[in-house]
Amino acid sequence: MLEQRSVTASAPCRIDSGGTWDIKALALPLEPAKPVTVNMALNLRTWISLFPHKDGWIKISSEGFPHGEEYPCENPSFDSKFGLFFAAVSHFGLHGLRIHIRSDSPLESSLGGSSTALIALLKALSEISSPLDQKKRSKGEILHLGYHLEDGVSGGYCGIQDQAAAVYGGVNEWTWSFGKKGSYLRRKPLLNAKGQRELSKRILVAFSGKRHVSSRVNRVWVNDFLSGKTRAGWIEVNGVVGLLADALEKETWDEAARLLKEEMAIRRKITPDALIPITERLINQAEKMGCGARFAGAGGGGSLWAVGEKDRIRDLKGIWDKTLAPLRGGRVLECAIDPHGVR
Image: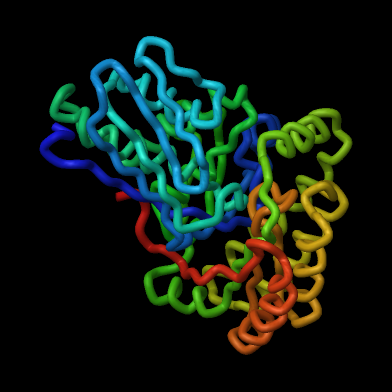
């Protein structure tokens, strides 16, 4: 099949508010509080291409990484840099293929890159496997498989919001209910196509130039929550994120900026390691301009985003451009809301 034509799929990355609530360790015990996350898919897409390879082998390469990895199909590594993707191929029972990953977003930029790549890969793998097993996988099935694969390989410290944004695109409020059989999330789209275009004019996304690793940060946050050390703060964050969803749905941009600023104030107390000097400086600059700003994902480097009225975002872009100019790789990312999920 791949000798006749290569197969390509892509999915969008995301920015978010209320991330970490999508991890079961937080959401399950406090399900009565209706844990929520708001995220927005960005048109910085990750692309997966499948090509033929030698029989019995699987090879994976990615732009930005000097070396790929190759294993025999009977014993691929699941804990290497590309281990998650080998696990996905193993799940489908496929071999004799080469996988190449290309991303429009910076590497390890806290925009959900690995989860986005996984969802795109599952879409591509389902395309070539469906003629064999006579089963076409729906978006919901791809999301279910992607989440459980990544959660399993990560040892249980994985959330589901990155995969959800990659699958569905757009701007959504997600309510997590892992204790309910067969329905552990509820998706509420917040903006139609016109509203998404308006929001695109009022957000700013930047990469700090510093890569991050979310799994290490998430472990600390989960442990602090489980011990009770930060639990009250997390509950406070959840209330703010619910109000942010309402503000975005009503397109009250100043209120959205105020609420994102409020979430960030709580986050400074309960997740101080999410900030590094450059991201703290950029967030402070945004707040002085009357915008709200927040690190993306688990922070600790990576990217951040801001929301505010158009004139304030325009002025903030000039400030962020100047601040990031001396930093290698640091830059404002040209992007907009992506209404499309995996395809």
